[in-house]
Image 1 (cartoon, rainbow, N blue to C red):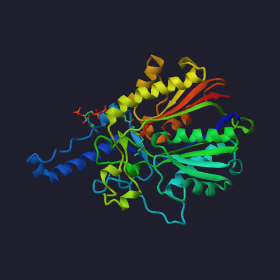
Image 2: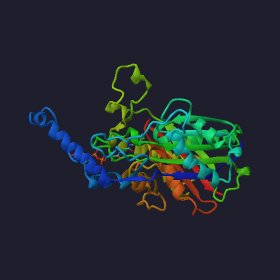
Image 3: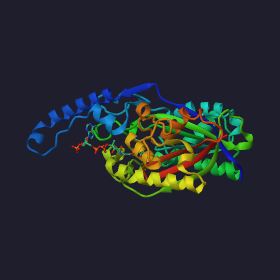
Image 4: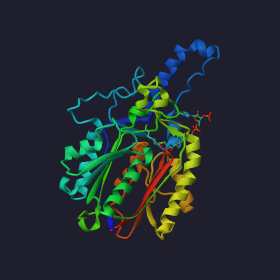
Length: 373
Ligand code: CO8
């Protein structure tokens, strides 16, 4: 088996920012309008009035202060409450491929690689904007890569699961180098009329290059010591969006077709699963918690990350040991742990260990243990 390294990472975020204050102002205006419209039903007790959202709750419950939006237009408009993303023609670059390219190019540059070095492209994220042709093949063509590409969907673990497919391919020799890209365009799936979830997600794109250690010329590279994936079926995080809507006579734009969750249950069930998974993963490799210099964890909720790190370390987590990017980016589905890595890896010294880990819908947990070279 070949020794496999992560040799480059790329991160791109859209220019548009939505603060908690903007989001809350818009939601509360919409809620007040709905309460006015249905005042008679509310008066008769037939409907519950919408309660206001609050900036304080969002920051305390999630750690999120703002998020990036690929297209901001429409999201805060109470007559619309969803981004107004113009449709592109079949002869134009798709939105998600455009996002993917923004992250792929810096990842290739960081790895000192060109299109000619890459054999496999994986676009892996929570949603792809179409079924086929794969976004990965569109990106492959745009970059001029001769090889193959495919899309993968594993919700919040899309990035880590794709990195594991890349690791397997390079280790086995079926690809010399792999480009894994996560164009997380989450805003079209957010229900901005749902007080419990309107603040959770942001848009971003991340990318990584994996290759054989003997071809690596990057300034910062990490040997992948091991990978681990786990899934356990749960309905607690769900989106029913899909192609059957055309045939099953359900409302293709119904709220069940958007992201919805039982956040409390997710919190309670996923935290212990993730902590146990991480412990088992490092122990398999002969490592203990004090051997891990940095934990690049999934970014869904700051309280969740603190609980997991406290359970692992037995002490209060610091941002140096477990960086948090939620405040700036919000939950970016599978890209969160990769953003944490992208912004916090160059200071590691040769021999330092780190762990990338995702957890979320499915349920799914994916991890990679790395050693700086
Ligand atoms: N403003 C003010 N008050 C609010 C608001 C709000 N916006 N929302 C809820 N409240 C109120 C509630 O009504 C409740 O009031 P009461 O106590 O009177 O009933 C009170 O605040 C507390 O509510 P919760 O118990 O729901 O609050 P929590 O502290 O649990 O926080 C969270 C809610 C932030 C949702 C938290 O439960 C959480 O983050 N859980 C983990 C969830 C998680 O990690 N999910 C993973 C989702 S991501 C994923 O898997 C990928 C999916 C694919 C991507 C999708 C892209 C769109």
